[in-house]
Amino acid sequence: MNVRRLIPTAALAGALALAAPALTACSGTPSAGAADGRLAVTASFYPMQFLAEQIGGDRVQVASLTKPGVEPHDLEITPKQTAQLGESDVVLYLKGLQPAVDEAVAQAGVKNTVDAATLTKLDAHGPGGHDHEGAHGEEAGHSEEAGHSEEAGHSEGDGHSHGEAGGDPHVWLDPSKYAEIAKGVGAALEKADPGHAADYRKNTDELVGKLTALDTEFKDGLKNTATRTFITTHAAFGYLAERYGLDQEGISGVDPESEPSPARMKELQERAKKENVTTVFFETLASDKTAKSLAADSGLKTDVLDPLEGITDKSQGADYFEVMRSNLKNLQKALGAK
Ligand SMILES: [Zn+2]
Image (tube, rainbow, N blue to C red):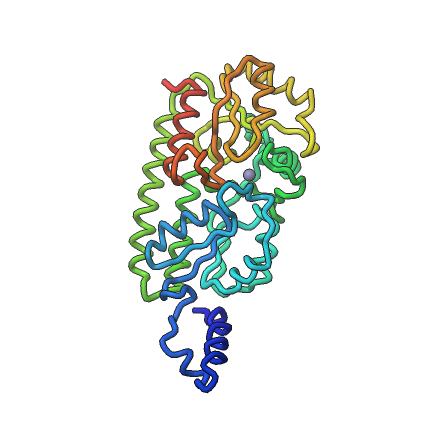
């Protein structure tokens, strides 16, 4: 419960009524942050928003700090959003993905603040997933930074910090890890609004069931393929690759503003040839320039692999599940699923 947002309205009502005692203006005010008694949840970006909506159902009113179509890593927080954060009953975010959000959340000091990164285990992933040992070694933190700051859609170099632990934040792209986070979010909503705990529990169970089914679809759909390697501009699919035994090759270089180095492009071309790669993936929210030039140079096709950092009318589906199934279909095509 948070009554701070009600104070200005109450004060204004009192002032307009002139003679009315301040206390009467407060009578009948809702007990939760949202005006209609629902729990006011602020989510940092789409995958958090989707969890809050699915688990909260009609008990919550969900606002997202990242508007559809905005590249989430580069997000800047407006004063209005900072105020909105402070008035929330629950804040749900993923530390390490959006530095501006991390800062604003820390300042807001909302009691029910949920960091999704604490609800599952984060790993480090390099831009090239073929060497699993290397990807998890000491150097992974460096290659991770380099890999992500090079992402085509991320125009801001430092925008993609991975937090102190150096873990890859793109956990939602692994349905199993996303389900772990869903369970934690369900527990947090139960705690914030114990009166509706049974609803949150039921919705959580349903969502986890659907995510488990999605995981099975991916497992089965990617079991038998001509190649295990895929190339992507946005190296966001490290968890997905690891879960299903695939190798992600991120197009990456050192300077985020520059094209990938000729050496990296050559390396990717050779790798593509060796591993019978057919497709270079790009994402809907970002430029496809690098993907297209690599594809043209190597005689490869391009297709979309959506990191689900936001949903727009260009997305290949209306929600998490639809876009993930499009991703699966596109991966199957590119990998030559039998
Ligand atoms: Zn990303």
